[in-house]
Length: 223
Image 1 (tube, rainbow, N blue to C red):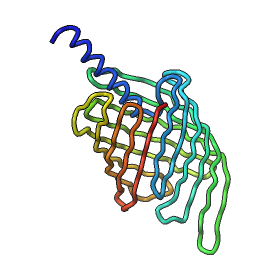
Image 2 (image 1 turned 45 degrees about the vertical axis):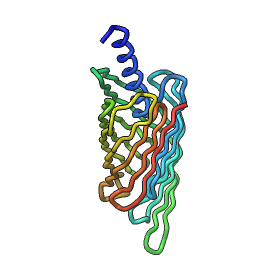
Image 3 (image 1 turned 60 degrees about the vertical axis):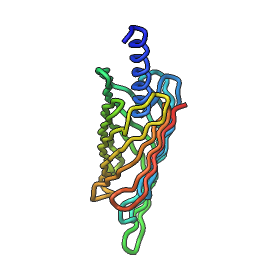
Image 4 (image 1 turned 90 degrees about the vertical axis):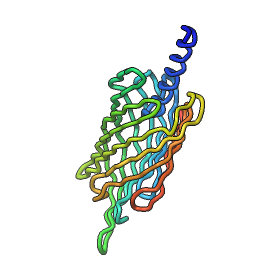
């Protein structure tokens, strides 16, 4: 391979990995906006953030939560902060450690036998996420606290996946993703969802059906 061809290959690979990393993480590049959404019957989340540096982003988010038995509902609006704590650039791969957190207002309702209980409280949501990715494999683990007075809805998720084939960084690439997650106090079981992901530079979309037969749809777009 000639030097110029080798340089072009490395540049191409670097652009692909960096663009994929931006999609995999909870924020984009400096001066970019990121919009994300995650939707199913028991969990609906949407947020937008703006990256003020390559490692820091501020934003707003809204989350709807419902228990498996549909007796508890929660609605959270929050201001968020995201920070890239550490990045490891490895041969043909990358790993990242993120902080994500917020503060906002949570409104809730508990439907009890013969009565209903409503509340409105301040909630804090600090958490961490670790992810590792190449152009062919992906792994992420996250734990986030959802805490208010007398409320603990801590959220844990693990996901892994692989791409079906190699492609250029500017082409759409299909992935198979499997995620397991749980929210304390709202579900007694682990939700498992296999999903198909389509990723192309600054966006991805995911769709699947979880082990309760509920549809799930996710998206991300950086602009």
